[in-house]
Length: 171
Ligand SMILES: Cc1cc2nc3c(=O)[nH]c(=O)nc-3n(C[C@H](O)[C@H](O)[C@H](O)COP(=O)(O)O)c2cc1C
Image (cartoon, rainbow, N blue to C red; front, side):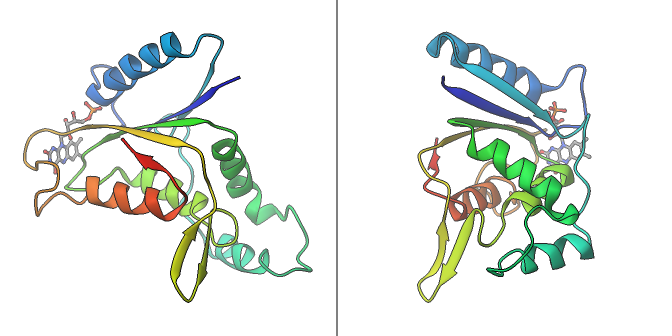
């Protein structure tokens, strides 16, 4: 069964353009994938916390071969990564907030972009550990920045961070 993970990040619910765009995409995706299943992670209704010291230490310790698995401080990150790994397609709905992405979406990336889990490093740089997925981004803005403009820190950031985590095809 083909699966879609939809990630909403806009704080506005009623009248939200990014959510309407995501609704449209999800409906078209469902038409194209009969029998497919969509999971919604709404970072506005159910925000993930900012990374704390315990999580960063646990992420580091988890890379040790004799590390205990499933420590409490990695539980959320492990669950978010498992959700991401199980998705065939990923849809990210991101409004532009103060020239960048919403902080809840940045916090989400801080939990899932994790050394040894979703990327690795060697002398040649970063290597993504997720493969075979397509990520689709719907972005909304009020108009003060256009995609790729010098004051747009949203689209360039999303391109970079999504590329770092795997062979994700930018659409
Ligand atoms: C806190 C906040 C900051 C915003 N900053 C910008 C900005 O820097 N540039 C811009 O063009 N629009 C900005 N906007 C406008 C939103 O990008 C625009 O209203 C978008 O449609 C919001 O997404 P939504 O419709 O899904 O809520 C901002 C809106 C909010 C609420």
